[in-house]
Length: 258
Ligand SMILES: [Zn+2]
Figure 1: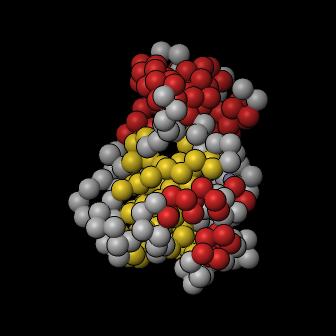
Figure 2 (figure 1 turned 90 degrees about the vertical axis):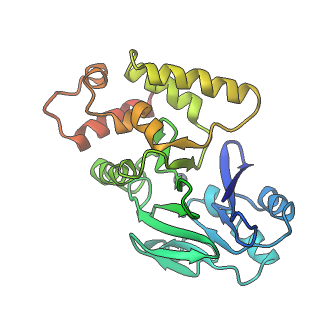
């Protein structure tokens, strides 16, 4: 499987996912039409399916352009996003698993950022999976809670934390450097964060995306996966006895104003 990030708008990523034999070509989050169509034209001009992680415009605005060029392409999203994703034809529930050519796709329902947020876990053969997390999990961050509670997001991040550590994480925005600044504030003595700050700065200096991360890297660096850590709790004044959802609420609110 080959995954190509397609920069869209100011800091969005759409993704072109192609099977190793090139027969299956899937777009995850068609943020806007022109750059995604250019990416599709580059490799033979076919499209197998569109996967939408959630209904926000900066993740689905390009659907109409893609469907105008490739009429009849199936568009996948969560069942609860019916009426909110342009062109949606497939209405997925948590755990839905389906094949597109050689690719196997499992949809995880991860509410919090939006009610119908999905993460798509894509595999081909024995290679590590690629998880397309939309605005639920970012490198070193998580999405804002527009339609869900801290408890929702805690459960959703728990599902992602349970994926194999080598799972590659492709998120919806290039927010990594600012997220890492917050992570370093949260845990000043976390050496993994410090290393990742340097790595991200080097990539961005060359104009390259910081994606993919991995679940293992996120578990080591992402404050929203690390709300139980004593140093983080000390930074934000979270009592040792506070539960995971309460801790996430405090960290999310701190990030909102950081
Ligand atoms: Zn969003």
